[in-house]
Amino acid sequence: MFLTIKNIPRTSWSSNKPLNFKPKLLTFLFLCFGLTLFGIGEGLLLVSYMGASPWSVLAQGISLKVDFSIGLITFFISLFVIFLWIFLSQKPGIGTILNAVIIALMIDTCLTYVETPEAFLSKILLAIVAVLLVGLGSGFYLIANLGPGPRDGLMTGLQEKTNLPIALVRAFLEITVVSIGWYLGGTVGVGTLLFAFGIGPSVALGLFLVARIFS
Image 1 (tube, helix red, strand yellow):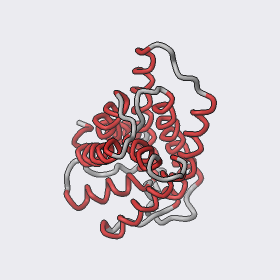
Image 2: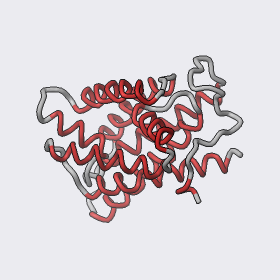
Image 3: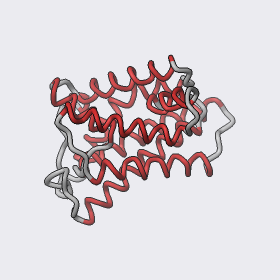
Image 4: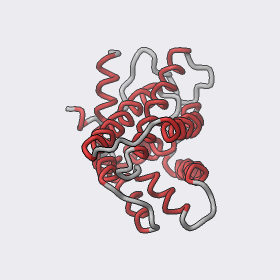
């Protein structure tokens, strides 16, 4: 069962080490593809107007307290999360840097060019697709092994320390973050709940599918 996955799978195109600054072209392309899917998923969730992802809710909540854009606050949050890696023996790589850049660009692209559906059911379906895209994107770039994104580095670091399933660790992180964001005034909706409770299984499914396809 994919829900019991505890380790990041490896494929023929996975980098041998996260701190690889001269990866194979295929590895680099799959990394960028995964991050693009992730960013599209985040953007579509915002477009659905059903509630942002937990980390976006946190950024939104903070933006209500300080005069910075949500994008800039998201960047600062990423830097803070990377700082926490020090205590989890995690090290940033190419994927860590590109995570912040590509995802931010794809979110802005979705918000600019994708229209919000009018029907409520269509909005719900868009939110579900968004969560699945984030999970699939996570599968690609985590398996590329060029350094996880800030949030996923936190996830994998905690998993290694606790030896708990990835799905459980990710769900715990998302629920904690969205609670803080909501307290600060961030908007929480059905899409937020779908992301908070669905992202753990979605990431695990993404890892399973990518590993199975390229095994």
